[in-house]
Image (tube, rainbow, N blue to C red; front, side, top):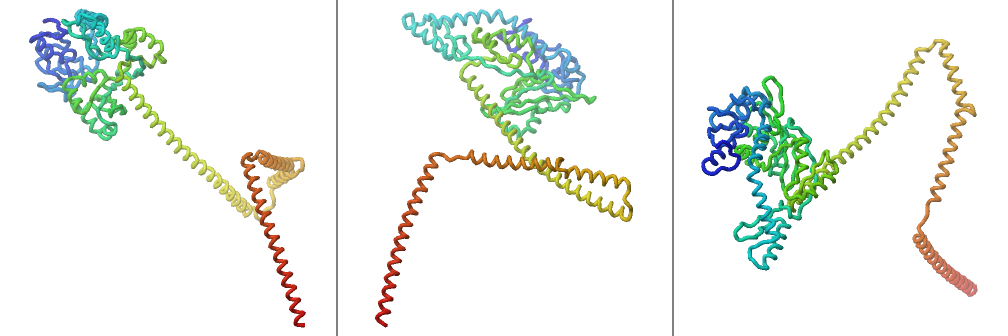
Length: 509
């Protein structure tokens, strides 16, 4: 068979399936196949092993200057530095584009009738099923419509034809919406590849060094390669996103990053993918910006099951077409996923804001402490300056002791006397200073008066105070009346005592 892009039957299909990994770019050190029944994009057949990263005959593939060759059936990036021509030549992107183009051209004639039959069967299940041949078919049609709207179930419409499988991608599903996602702005040369681990962020960070060593072993353990972690981010459902890139160092001392598409192609190989799954990787993808042609193709072709009118409206409503791209949200699971991602991002933003707030508080404390120290040092400097001036004065007095006053000193004395007279003059600076001081005192007095005038008491509180004072007044009046009564009683007692004394005095006399 000369060309075979489908899934052939019989022994040819087995040969095609076996040669599939070698087709396209030959894999990372994968042994080339000799099967000729399937079409392959790989290099000419060799008797040895030709890998993607540096082969003896295929010099168009490799990391930089190549990574040597492997022997037997071993896989990996090689163990030595070969003589490959680096990332130039026929890279994996060109091969993947060629495969996609040829595959699409050869597969379209077979898929078109299948899609047409699928649409006809769906329409029959929703509008005119002929399963029972009576009025129950109308009820079945409504039930099929309900399943189609919900996006789940099977639509039976004919006894001789298999039922239609309703998925959420069918055009009749109602649980769809369009959201917006941020487009990456990294280039392929940056080499950023995203690995999603089914582990918590704390576990990943605590075992980051072991993770880097394990990924280096996955890449073949080549000493010219080094794995670097660009960033770690928490995802919902206890998953973690790790962004990595690989740096290749050549013997002449230069280094470069491995392109993201080349590294991703290596991770997608069957044996490498198995090793990554053993490390806990559930998903791998490149983080590269989309080309204008890719963006145009994505925008022109609505996703499966999305109404073109809704898609066009989503493009019109895009708040930032330079940074955001519309993406479909089909079903509640996708909506829940985006909600979890949004909650996770909100928590990360809040955490970052808390950290910034703590940093600002710490900076404010440091600023206050620094300002206090600066004021203290200023006072200390002023004190030292005065002490230094006093020392200089005493030293100058000792040095000039016994000498007559010189002309410059006499001139300086005259200037100082003149300044002193100007300061003491009533209409000069001293009078103005006194006037300013009196104005300041007046303003302080008026300010105190105004502040007293602004003070007031609430009406209810004033009423309570009056009631309390009234009760106090009544209590005082009652107390005064009691005291008066007691004083009268005391006077009566004294009068009685005086009369008794006079009577006794008369008897004894």
